[in-house]
Length: 596
Image 1 (spheres, rainbow, N blue to C red):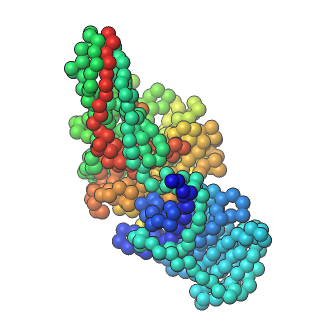
Image 2 (image 1 turned 135 degrees about the vertical axis):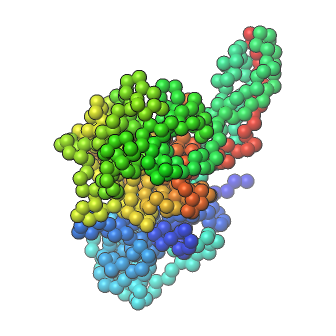
Image 3 (image 1 turned 30 degrees about the vertical axis):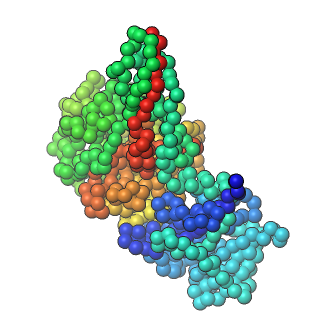
C-alpha cells in the first residue's frame, strides 16, 4: 500500500561549541523530515545560508552573522528567509538596528540577498516572522524587539515598499522538538517532494546502493572482456561506470566454452594522508605520465620537488626530484608556494609564488619547461618570470599575489589568482581573473576582474581569505573552487560557477555559492581541507587532490579522493571511499561465453 510523502523543512541555528565557533553557528541550517519522522540535518549539520560582511569606507570587511532565520513560502514561486543580522559573535549589530535581512530562493540551495528591510521601530530586533496571506495577496511581517515589544506590518511586495508598523497583540515562536546536536530551532515549513528530494540529493553525501553487470557476455578476445565495466548506482540517482580487473587466466580463447569468472572493481584506494607535510598538491598528466607537485612544508617552503608515476596511485610512494630551491634565483629566496602544472598553447609551465624579501613581496611567477626537457631535471626549466599586468608593471605593487591557476576555454587562456592588497590597509585575500598571452602566459592582456572576496563568515573565520582557485569543468558549467579562512582547522572550500558560453571577464555572469563544499566537519579526521586541484585519469574519473590536517593541529598533508557528480553536474567533494564503493560490491562475478 502506497501513501503520499509529506516533507517538512526545519530552519535552525546552532549553539557554538568546540570547533563549531560563532561565525559558523550563527548561520541558517536546514533539516528535512518525512511523514513527521525525525529531522535529518543537512550538509553535515553545518550552515547553508550566511549573510555577507559589511564593506566599510576603506574597503575592509566587517564580518556579520545571522540569528533566528525564519523560512516561508513566497506569494509566487520560491521561498523567502527573514533573519536578524548580528555581529560575528552573535551580539546585537548597531548597523542593523530596527532592520532585518531578506533572502529569496527557489530551492534553498542558492539565495539572493536583498537590502535590509527597515522596520521603522527603532529598537534591536530579536525575532522576526513572515507569512504570505493568499486571500489578501500580501505578506504579514511580525517581530519583537529586545524589550519584548511586539509589532506587525503588511506589505504587498517585500523589499519594494515602505513598512508601516503597528503594535501586535502577540508574537509566538514555534516550539520544535529535535535531537539534532546543538540545534536552536526557529520554524518548520511544509515543502513539496521535488524541493525536499533535491535538498537531500545535494546536501547529503551520496552512497553506493548497488551494482549491475550483464547476465552474461559473449566475447572472442581478452580485450573485449577487459572493456566490460560495472555500473555503480548511487543514492542520488546517478550511475558511474567503473573498470573491472577480471580473473581470466583459466579462459581458453581458442575454444568455444562458458566460464564463471570473478573480478574486482579497478579503482585505486587512497588513505589519508597520502603524503605528510605536502600542501597545495597538484597532479598533472604529461606525455603518458602523471606528475605530482606540492608546497614542501617539511623544509619551510624552501624547495619544490616533483614525483612521476605511470598511475596516480604510484605517486604516493614515487621518488622525489628537486627542481627549484630558494638559492637558485635572487628574486625567489623565500616562500616557494603552491606550484601548479599548466599546459598553455602546447607548452608546459609551472605557476607558483615566491618572494625576494618578506611576506609582503610574495609574487606570482611562471616557469617554462625547455623544449624536450625532462620535468624531473631542474636544468630543463627556464628562469621563472614574474607575472605582469598588461601595462608591463608587476601584478601588484601594494601587496602580494599567489595561487595562480589557468583556465582554457573557447581558444582563450585566463589566469585566476589570489591577491592581498596591504596598502593603504590590509583588505584580506580576494580572487581575480584576467586573460593571458598564450605565448607568454606570465603577461596579462586584460585588466583584472574581481570574482570573490571573503564576505561570508565561513570565509573570514580567523582571517579574511579567499585563495587557491582551480577550475573544474562539468557539463556546460565551469566551476572554480577556492579555499577560505585561516590555513588552520577552519580552512574550507567554496565555489564559483559560470556557464561555459558566458564571458568570463564579466563578474555579473558568475554565481558564488553561499556555503562551503568542504569543511573540517565533512570527513572525520580531516581538519582544514582545502587548496584543491583536479586531474582526470585514463578511465575518465576525476580526482580531487587537496591538503588537510590529520588532527586539529596536525601538519598539512595531501589527500586524494574521487570527485562525484550529481545528475545536474554539481560536484561532490566529500564522498569517501566507503560510500563510493560499498564493500559488498567490490568483488564481482560474470558469466563469459567464448566464441573463437
